[in-house]
Length: 432
Image (cartoon, rainbow, N blue to C red):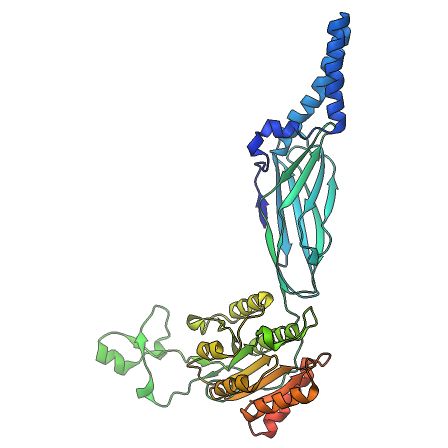
């Protein structure tokens, strides 16, 4: 919820009252001019009744300015976005709440929220007078087919008095951020990949205890089951010791995303690069849902989660990766040297890559990455160059030990996922 306080903004340089008088409409200025003219005529002609009329004409817009200026400074607004993170092509709702905290009713209100053009037209609402202490709520929808992070706001408010004498504007400072995630394609539940030891079921398994001497005990904590007391260590240390809980090992997968600008041709929501980003997001979502410990690496060296993030909460890690994929852009890199440095010290598992056009030098670098994984699958963007040339590039990855598949436009990733599982099985590397 983004909220804005009651202080007005945007006119402090001229002073609040002077800025308020600048909001007089043509009608308000006409009343002031008529009042001044009536006062002059009353003085020249010696007509005191005409002077009273002139004072009334001039006082009405001045009174409207003062009342509306006070009302403007006592109007609060808040925005709530639900949800704040949506997949591309999905809608989110924006709830605006305007509250009158003054002791007098407000005039006519015109609301306008600033929205990036990719989310749709700029919403505008007209609200009737709000009673003292009252509130009004309005809702509008935003939608984007293009991933990214988009600011919503600040909210702009225009107030008008019932007589149409003055219009004052107000801009709040608060804004929200809407994150549009890449498109996620559902993948078939096929075993594809292993954990750090090469046992791939996609589910957790526990460490087998070979014997009493292999257990590393820890200090007793209040609430521990007394049946887990390790008596030998207790006698040796002179303090109550218990067996450690069996720690689960999760199947691991590293998703490599090629962001090299030179590896892709074209742009837009259906470009090869956007297909690669969407594929990486689909694999992360699919494997995380099956219990894998997933991390994301790019050719530029981006590693999520970082070195200290292993074993973090799965939902938090997945959200971190998805947020990064929502805003990832092309890199100026030419090879995968930084990616190799980011995954240095890896302990096996499954390696899945989404790449653009790969030459011999890049294939050699990917071959070095392949040596650190139990199985490696590459989905290479196709349809950018001559088919024979692209087939030659695929053979280069195959020679480097990868299971390489062309990823042309219009072909569902789920079909390629099944094909990768079949090829790994035929090669004696799966299912993992």
